[in-house]
Length: 253
Image (cartoon, rainbow, N blue to C red; front, side, top):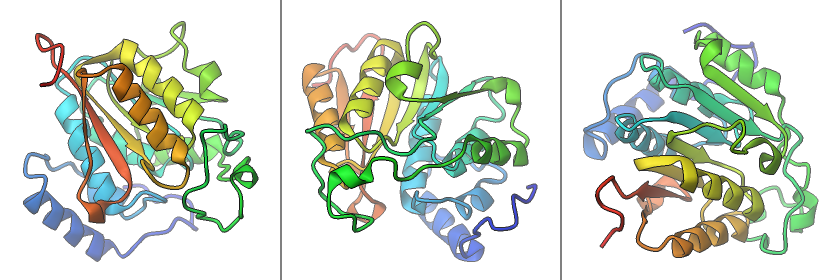
């Protein structure tokens, strides 16, 4: 693959390759081989290898369903490039959303659970984790993903992810917004546009802010029986997976 900027971190590529092969053999045998995946796994920032493998498994299961692919909360775009590489041979578009201004103001439902930066309060996280859209575009350009299939939206998701200009339908979405309000907004939008059998992965479930778990739990309860929530093996990290009931099966039993 084309090298990225000189300061791009490459994390022990041989070890990453071994982890990929071991996880694929033991947990994800249905996951197809994709050229360039292992190198992109070694370039991830903030997403662990195990979580990424779960994410890719959920992505590939959903690709047979109609609709595009979304990542909501893209940061530097390392995971965006990984996802883009996996859908290169499809006709699906990639929809990317981020404020590119750091974390928004937390709501009362965002209580600090894990003080990851040692800031002492949830309020001090407003504006943290700021990244530039140029970083995302550079990573997608480095893997030569077609620009015509990328929709990059900057701003608060409540203002950018709207029916008038959002993706429809959607087969897969990865949500990494950390806080209650943007996660619930994304889930609410996806409920209207997610294809039957589609999948959603929500990062930081029961980690960092209480808002992520609260938003997911409220959403699942509101749509009782329509989604199956599963958790990864404990070693893989803090996230959850939602599977929408397939057509002809309106509820899980």
